[in-house]
Image (cartoon, rainbow over all chains, first blue to last red; front, top):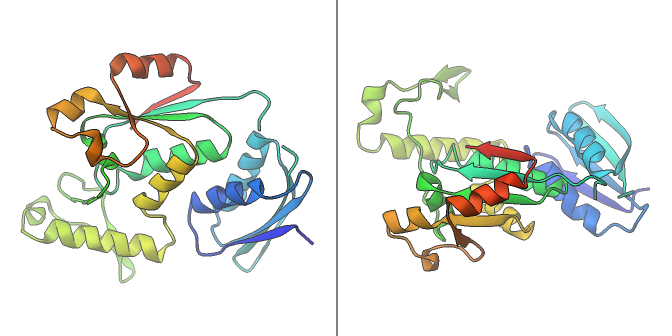
Amino acid sequence: MADHTLDAKGLNCPLPILKARKALKDIPADGTLEIIATDPGSVADFEAFCRQTGNELVEHSEDDGTYRFLIKKTA
Amino acid sequence: MSAEEKSMSIIVTKGSLDWAYPPFILATTAAAMGLPVTMFFTFYGLPLLLKDLKLQLTAAGNPAMKMPMMGAHMGLPNLLTAVPGVDAACTKMMKNLMSKKGVASIDELRELAVEAEVRLIACQMTMDLFEYSLDDMIEGPELGGAATYIEVATQSDINLFI
């Protein structure tokens, strides 16, 4: 169970990333943030976001056009 | 944030509804990824700092602007863009489309940029040229000129001109 879930469904680039960044601020160190999105571009973008910021993309999955990301706050 | 910190600057030169997007999208995203960001607003980019944004769009001179309509993509001949009301209709159509597709408004992206402490520099020369004052602008921009920007650019890893 993630510490917080961000519903970014229906939002387009770059809003899922911007909202995730804001949400991460309120997550404790080593806590997790779950993001639900529908923007297909968010897959590549969350991978890049995590590489650049040093946070860990623990898992991501897709189910019928809905994307789920789990980010661990390691930065 | 990232161990080796990179930074970015953007020269913002265009102020139509469509062209306002790339600089604000890139600035807010870079800031979200931990980069210190500076935006330098000059010429037609300067009005993007006005308190009251009245962004407009024109299809004039832009053959690539084609709106999705009933399964097809519709462009507008240059001649028609001169008809009164056509630009306003295009603007409205674009705003509707953006809102339908979950694209942020420029107001929203600009607020996020300010919140993320993106450094905003209003070109002093353009302020004089088009007779604007800082009172016309949102809270946050500082005044600066070419030398101010060049100093920022020499210290930035990414410098964009949009």
